[in-house]
Length: 219
Image (cartoon, rainbow, N blue to C red; front, top):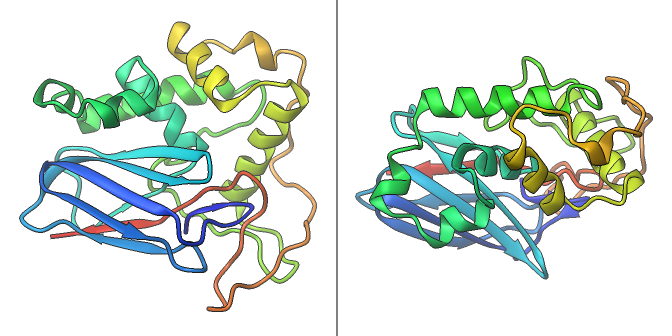
């Protein structure tokens, strides 16, 4: 589900793969599915609407069908993986760039992102690309990963730091705690329930800054 609080309805979803491309539009509840005809991994995914842009990747060798979360965490991971803003990978998805999108590289980048954020939010043990993400709905608290994404949004807000600034800080000093978040209190593993609603399709609607897929890519 694609969301930034409320779902990203009618958002543009685009995927570029080693072979094949695909586009689609999110549904009212933020869900979407991509079919890449004669596709081959790896792929880079972009979701955009009204100034919001987030990226994710599917690495070479990933098991099919593929599910990839598109969240602020995936944005940070892609930047850490490539050493540049995540948008750069989408703009220049060359054969050279694709060689770095391996399972081992994703594991290493994940460890660096988790380490950098450890003093603020504990993401240890979480799969930043494919972890189960259940947003809040009908007054219920979302699952733990959803709550952690909310905590990340609060930390950015409290420190007056944009996601792009955090991403650049993590790229500049891989694995190190970003100075911008140094004075933000560590978040608990759970947070209070926040108001939520149900989409016309009775699907979960997440709280602010929980932009999540899943995106399914099928061949």
